Amino acid sequence: MTDPLGGIFQGMDIIASGLKAEMQRSEVVASNFANMASTGNEKSLPYRRRSVEFEEVLDGISGLKGVSGGSGVASGVRVSKVVEDQSEFPRFYDPGNPKAGADGFVWTTNVDMLHELVDMQQVERTFNASLQAMRAYRGMLQNTISNISRT
Amino acid sequence: MSGLDIGGAQGLLGALTRPRLLGDMAPAGSGGEGAPKTAASGFGDALYDALGRVNQLQQDVRAKAQGIMTGEPVELHELMTSIGKSEVAFNLMLEVRNKLVDAWDKISRAVV
Picture 1 (cartoon, each protein chain N blue to C red):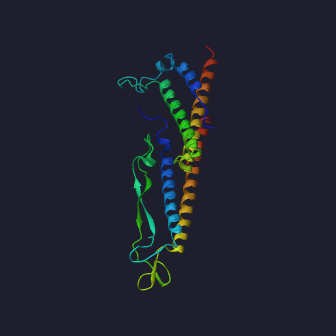
Picture 2: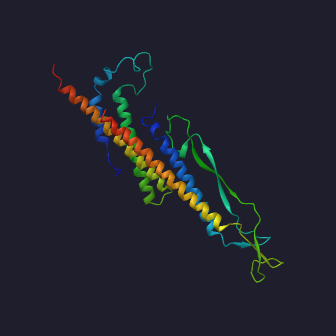
Picture 3: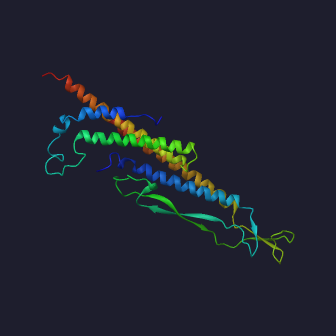
């Protein structure tokens, strides 16, 4: 049996997948901010900056069942993996620090605050854009439906 | 908000369309002849299915809202999407009903 009303919500599910992905990205950015002050040395490494990788989802958008119909040309998104930044840790000289190594240097995280701020801004703008797209999509459906009574 | 039970309306419409009245009037071209008889063939059945789907969407909203209130891992935008879907589906159902009632009205006032 075909699913009544199945296809018309395809766009909504795609936008929802984008919202979810941006939400996860913002969590990763928050984690970077929270661990910004972490220190370490050769033996116990400090926190590594994390970032997300997105991938396209062609089927089973947002894990919802019953997503059928639609044109089948569009696809959602999801976070495929969270990767760690392998760049070198900055270090500073502080022999009094309990984390200081034999040479008196302390390793600190490779999180760059300005970089993270820009990331956060980007997440916010993308999220708002997705919300706007959702509103537009809903408006289109509503307008079409109210046209029924006028035809 | 989401707790609107349309079971009564379903029963009413079911009673309206069950007597093979609308089913028999379906044009032969639209999957009548040759096409395999499935469970959802007549207009009444299609309507019934659509109503069930609207109801299901509303129950989905209720479950998600409840999930958020009770601390289950439901995200806010999921609830928002569900509300949007349920709203659109309900309005569509309303328009179809209006059309149906309009059509019935016209027929009932027809001069024979």
